[in-house]
Length: 70
Image (cartoon, rainbow, N blue to C red):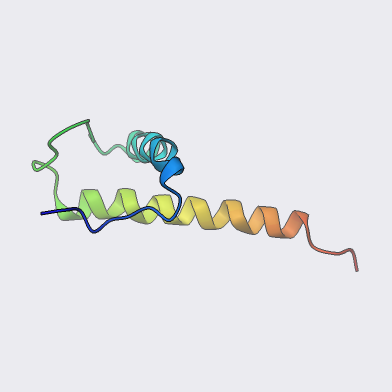
């Protein structure tokens, strides 16, 4: 069965994978290349959730930096 997780920007795959492992390491989830079926749903979810949180924070910083002066 083909994966349904298609990247909007396929060229970003390597960067997202690297980011995923950095986040997992940062929050103490023992994510490794290959099979990770020994991890709980909560562990996997925390990696994804923290990735989203960090991406939103980065976007907010970018938007704040580009905001017009008042």
